[in-house]
Image 1 (cartoon, helix red, strand yellow):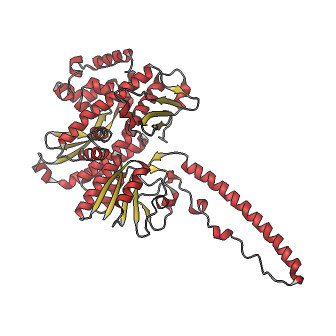
Image 2 (cartoon, one colour; image 1 turned 180 degrees about the horizontal axis):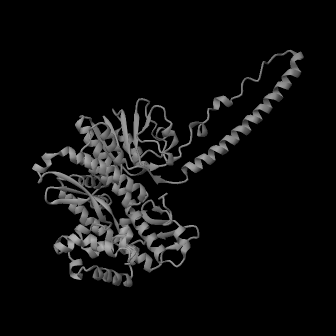
Length: 503
């Protein structure tokens, strides 16, 4: 039996879905256990470790010394698929129990083994010599002791120098937290190398990769290159479907890669609401202010989109306006500094009624994943989010999209309140903001992904409105109340807007 420990994030869920599909085809018995933090990892491992030989850890475990933490029996093997960086060096250089499924990357700057690990046996002093009682050898013994003392001093100095060098190497290696390749993409490439890939699998990989882009886990350059790589797989797998797909258009799966707008859920929302709650438009037009709302109406009017149409659901708008919407936005984007709005996306089409882009799925999954309550445990939320990846559970996906709208609305309103009341504090070397307590939305921000989205929104908006240019080089730390009983808080750190790499 195999134990899967899966982190609470979209990329991990997508990777898990691909692995489940592979296990199902090979009739492998497995247990899935969602985990949030090190405490959950320890608990789920202890609860499920009996009769388990292999443990697969998805987006967890890579940054901690697993053998020291879990003390597993020698026969147990851990397979780590983790996009968190930097990876723990004990895991990287483990000879038997830890296997990391990833390709070495020059950007990770992994130190050499001899630079960080030292065999102390080589430093042990050899015997101090014979304990002969012969008085004639007394002078020789004294000279030998002096020589050994000198050697001991030299060895200690060399060890101190090595330890100092090691500390510098470890500091440079561990000073930044960042993300590597999407685990879902990694799992798909593994399935492809075994010739067991499919269109469903590449779609799950696309959703996992899209989550990294939406939450700014990777730089845009990396996301664009990954999209091109996935597009190649989509073309290959679509071609493999051949003529059969044309004969069964109603049930055929199609994945389309095309130009698109970075507007949250706009195909399932009104244009006005989508623009108000999307970071690129909200920041560029400053939509948290009265003047910003006026600019939005000016933008829509200049674009040629009637106010009545912009307040209707996108699917209910005039057909010509829907078809020309992207081109209309593209034409005015440079004037309103909305170049970040233009991009590409993957869209999944199944039959005539199932059509969603990857970002829609990500927002729906995030909303379902981070909405536990009295009637719903985090475990159930995890399963609901995973159901969004199934084409046969459209009702769950639609429910997720409706919750995502409420989530994005809460993020915008909270950011608006913080900016209007000037709650962002400049601490000199960084900015910080404390989420207000006692509001209807305060519990929502006790979840990491939503707090991160809010922090990114606030930082970009604050830099856009600040008269000080120096704030562009400052990171932001956001704090939200996490647990009343333990009096703990959740922290989210966002790198400066001027940084190209999200570290």
